[in-house]
Length: 175
Image (cartoon, rainbow, N blue to C red; front, side, top):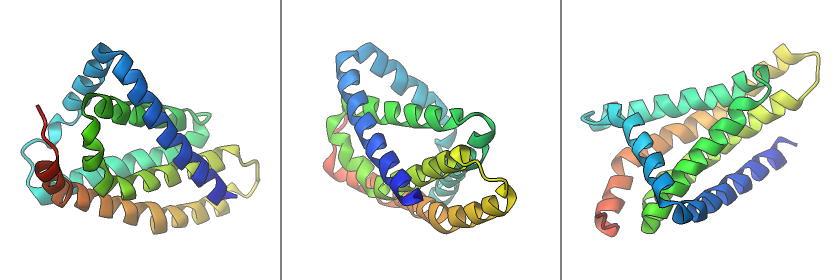
């Protein structure tokens, strides 16, 4: 059951990214505002050495994933939808502004996007389930999260810091 939910979230994530890219091309001023807000949000990462940066990226992604996976059930699933929309809108805006930047997203995105979609699916699964044995099941859910999401986020953070910049500098010319 959870595997189907994960697949659905991956497909919805990709579809929303493309949708927001199209919307971003139609509304360049909105795209600029989204990218400006994201730049401000990531300003705390500027000046960190690579190890600190990888740890900061991992921590940000881990906290976000924990919230959508385990806190959403107490907030009527709202963090799932907010997280999904904010992240896909950001990627869509980035791709609307710099279409060739998809090359820069792929190296770490192949790890980070599935990790995020697994966390989203887990949050949905926990929120939608009506079982009385929630404590035992949540322990199992936490173990699943630790075995799947955490390793993918670690790999994604390392790749984002050490490999993605090399690919961007080699293959992408930004204005």
